[in-house]
Length: 339
Image (cartoon, rainbow, N blue to C red; front, side, top):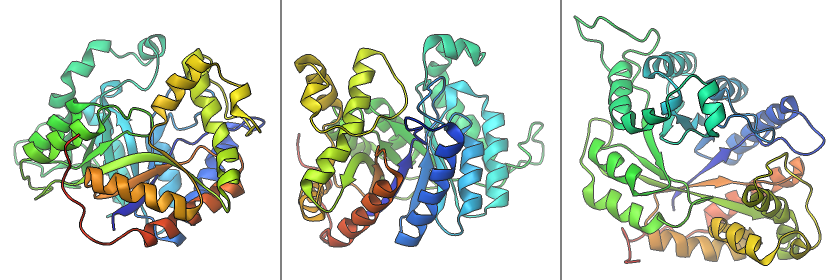
């Protein structure tokens, strides 16, 4: 069966503040470690009152310090926002503090709006340099040469594992060319999932980090003791995506009884499209649907994002998802089926 991991957006729910969100994240990470999840990632976003993961490396350290064995990392750091040397130093420091437990997932998008990008003192055109920046970062985290004038300290010789993140075939091409593991963001951008998986596996070139392709698919999942309860909890995420369509982001809202009263037909079409790869219901319901996804994509790992308002319900959902992982068939999934 594929490994199971967690993507935590460090969501700030209505009526709370970022400190509450960060404390809940530590609690969830400890819970995930006890349940046997493989890794726990934090995603970089800026200028969003409902997301508390902007200082991504700091939050990764917070989570790593609260746990003992689970891998912790970024899903991801938006590299165009940062000089590669700074990221090498940050994640080299994390690897020095928590050896063998740190992942560095890299994305090309800014994770924010244009005005905030300017406030970060970054040039929007830096996204075009993403492949070169990845190579520079790899070099800074790799072996230090005898005549190397610029070193990341800590960072050099740590060989922190790098992942390429993406929501299109661009990242798939790059991950394949560099021989790096690839994570696809199907939890909000499902359209190119199958083409990206196909490109990645067909074009993969072995590297020192990775001998064969390794693909992760990130999905949404909300599990509960009944299908009706899970659908109710899922309305918080449906509201959040509807608000994205409206351009009115905010804190995560409590669930509601009838989502049809919240969105218009046009908003529903947009939000539901982004939420295509959302798995909601009982363990048995989700297991059957996830097996189809695994068979279709050949995913080596599933990363689960769960936008659930109530913290205990979120803990319970991830416990059920761990049961789902145990139920999934252990037979090897095909590399791909044609789209």
